[in-house]
Structures are given as C-alpha cells and as structure tokens.
Length: 208
Length: 326
Image 1: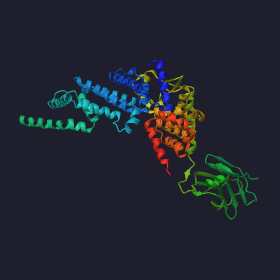
Image 2: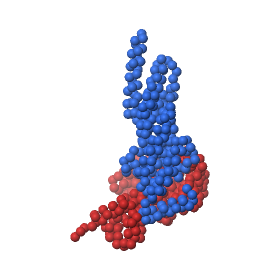
Image 3: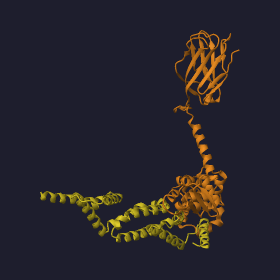
Image 4: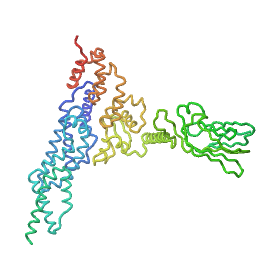
C-alpha cells in the first residue's frame, strides 16, 4: 500500500467509526487479496517475511466491519486449493507436518474471526476446519486412501516376516490418523487393518 | 518505684517489677503486640492475680482479639521455679475475661512474661476467625506494590526491553514476555516464525504514540486515571483487537458513566462496533426511554442515513417497546 492510499484507508476507517459508513466492498476485496497472498506464502514456506500484526489487523478489520463471511469462505477456498495441490503429489501424507504448521499460523492470524464470527454464525473453528479439509481432500481422496492403506499393511506384513521396516513413517501416519479424530482412524484403517492379520495367520497355519 | 513499662520483642512481652511495695494493685503501661495495645495487671490478695486484657478502644471493640498464650511469673535471682500457666486460648475484651491466680507470694524483683502463641481477630459475624500471623495481607500488598514499581521502571526506563513498537507517530520499547502474557494475540505473534519474531519490531499503525503508551501503562500496571480517561476509546479498540478482556470491560464501564446528548450517538456506534451490550442498551434507553432522542434531532438524521441496517432494526424495536399508543 502506498503512503497516500494508506492514509485514504485510515480516513475511511475514521469516517466509518464516526458516522457508521460501511467499508466498501473494494476495500474488503483488497484486504482479502493480502490475506490470500499470506496464506499462499505460508504454504510455500515463505512466511518468515510476513508480518503477523499486519495480517492479524487486516483480518480483524474485515471481521469487525462485517466481512467475516467473505474472510471465512475465502479461507475455505484457499486452503482447499492448497490441499488439492498437495493431494496430487505422490507422498501427500508426508506433507501432514507442513499442513499442521501452516494451519496453526493461519488459525492465529485469524484468531479474531475464531473468537467472534465463528461462534456467532455457527461455523467450524479454523483448526477443526483445517483438519476436516485435510481428511476430505487428502485421506479420503481415493488414490491416497488406497495407497496409504496398502503401505501400512505392507509394512506390517513385512515386519511379521522379519523384514526391516520404517517405523518412524508408520508412527507418523498413525499419529496423523489419530489427530484427525477417532472416527477417521477406526473407520478408514482399523477395520481393514484387523482383517489382514486374520488372513495372514490363516495362511501361516496352512503352511505348517 | 516500680516500673510499669512492658518491653516487647516479637511475640513476647516482659514486665519487670522491681518491687511491688505496699500497694495491692498495679497496672502496666500499654504495650503493642499484633494490632492491639495490651495491659497486664497484678493484684495482691490471698493469691497474686494476673490479668491480661486489651486497651479499651476501637480495635478491641471492633476487632476483639482471640489470644492463645502462656504466662510465666518468676523471681529474679532467687533459685525458685517459675510459675508457668497452662496454654490459654480465649476471647479477650476487657479485664474480666482472663485472670490467673498464682498461689504464691513474690518478694523483691520479679518478672511476668506473656508469650503469645497465636492472635486471631474474633469474627463478629460468625465466620472463621483469622490469625494475624503470618501477616499475609500486608505481605501481599507489599509484594504487589514492589512488583508494580519494578514493572513501571521496566517500561519507563526500558530495562532489558526486547521489542520495539512503531506506532503511527513514534516509537516505544517494551517486553515480549509482558505483551505475551497480557494478550493471546501478542503471544502468537512471537510464537511463530514470522517477521515480528525475527525483527523484534511491531508496526502498530492504527494507534498513536500516546494511546499506545496508555495501553502499555495499563499492561504494566501503572496507568494513571487521567490517561485512561483521555485514551479510553483507543484503549477500547486495542482491548478488542488484542483480546484483553478486563481492559475492554473497564472501558465499557467507563463509557457508561458519562453518556450525554452530545456523545450518545457516537457511543451507540462504538457499542455496536465492539458488541458492548450494556453500553448499547444504555444508549438506547437514554435515547428512547428517557426521550433524549429529541435533543439530537439534527444529528439523528445523519446517523440514520449511515448506520448499519441491523443497528437500525434494533433501534426501531426499542422504539416499539417504549412506544405506547393511546
């Protein structure tokens, strides 16, 4: 924002406060563009140059001046876009840590929205929203779900027959599934998982 | 001449009597232990009667003492065993409340010791009596005052300040730790690897130097009433932005105190913006229940032209509640 524009913007806020002028849609759009850019930067690991205060203030002003809905729907769209991008890459589940870190930053920058707009309009809080979007776009994308399940079962079978496996990877995956909530862990993995050993031991018993 | 002065140290009071002489009654000078002035008296009759009682007055009347104590009477020099009372615990209001008869006669110099084991303030309304030892209230207020002094110095002299705040018109120095414990927003600001953590600088463009200083004085516990009063609208905005609930409440209370015709519309607008229900309710009552809307006839048209639709609806509903058609 140039200096002059900034002054015009501040003046607008002053006018708003004094006479209750609604901040115009143009302002809201411009502010959202800044926040959208910040979310992209966060996902692209370029966040260190971002100012927390500036983006928090932008989000705060949007919510304060009744643009909470625009901010929230923008967030959903932007985060979904990023998760769809991630789901295209081969080892998307490995990006879980990145997503988690980005989610925490975004949640804190949008803290004011979480505190006021989210409860008053019965929306899902940012953190939970981020987990749900990850579940729907990554874990439940048919490609990933199949691959993830096969990898896990494969690893466990390998270990049963005495082969070396990457336990760290297994631990991270299981932790992610637990973090996503008991329903994700149980329905998506525990059930098919418990069926496999049955087959394994049946085969073993027929060998002898 | 018998000295009537009682020496005290800590919880022990000691009355040295050089010579009882021919008199049969003697009362000590008052001596202070705890929050009361006390007297000892001795009376020679068949026994030696020792009494302990608080000096009559406000303290003993409004906060009568319950004392747990031991008395001891001993002859100086003589190789005699001292007389030691059992441990007494009683409410002492006047000289009749406690008397200890000692079955002996004392000649020459002798000493009376009172050792207070505990002193409580008797509760006149039936709740638990509380001990004056250790003196927690005094300790607490001492510690609080000293902490506030330290915090004020940290702010005013910038002692080990580790963050620079650039306001719209000047720069201030503060401490990340103080900001972080006062506001979850500042807490997150220094938590993530974003610009502020790296540069230790915050650009608060939407506050003036003076109002930001008032905010810091509040957070560091040393804000002055006149500064609060002068900057309360800016403080309200900051409290809302940085989620400092007690400050926000305090600003709302303050804004409730001086609603008048010239500021009621502005106050209503603030109440609407920051969702201050009490203030909003009061402004609406001021306008409609108390009929002051007729005092702001000119301004109200401008206000209606620009006010938020939802706020207008609320105002209209308030009118309907108040309005009683004949």
